[in-house]
Length: 119
Image 1 (cartoon, one colour):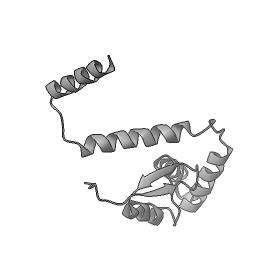
Image 2 (spheres, helix red, strand yellow; image 1 turned 60 degrees about the vertical axis):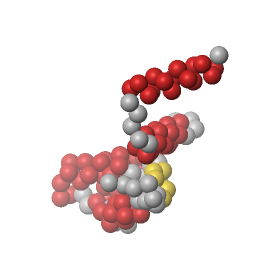
Image 3 (cartoon, helix red, strand yellow; image 1 turned 120 degrees about the vertical axis):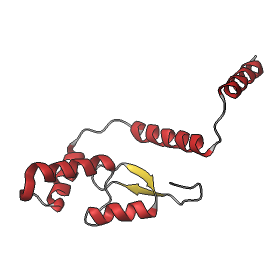
């Protein structure tokens, strides 16, 4: 379980360029599994699928190269909309997990107070 004092670092996927915030221990574990390369969860799944699909005919290094080439050839969406969305959801989840749960009655009081202030 993660604590509020745990340090997070930005890690950029070497295949698709997606950036995630992760603990140093997790970054090290991913790098150990993927020959020193950082890959995001989606690219890691694609690399694993490629190795499983091809069987003994493809090494992890070859699967990484294939995924890198595929990700670079894929059309890019304009801007950083996907990364911004993921970052916003991450912040929201952290806030929710770090704050004590509110009862339904408290939630209604807060909402009502906000409505009264807006008027």
